[in-house]
Amino acid sequence: MERPDKAALNALQPPEFRNESSLASTLKTLLFFTALMITVPIGLYFTTKSYIFEGNLRPIKTRRFPLI
Image 1: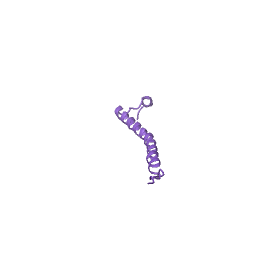
Image 2: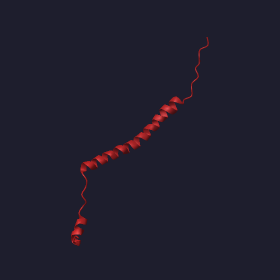
Image 3: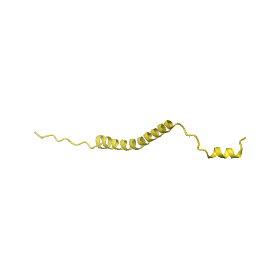
């Protein structure tokens, strides 16, 4: 068993951090998916609005043929 003063010193030391490249990779992945979660729904909204609601579901215009 450790002496109490040595255990107290070990508790005061900061924990060892993981590899910095691992942390950078994790943050890049987090930012990438955050950007996707913001841009994909907004992009799908405008795509749906323009192609489906303004494109295909527009009322069909009646054609007027010239009378001869």
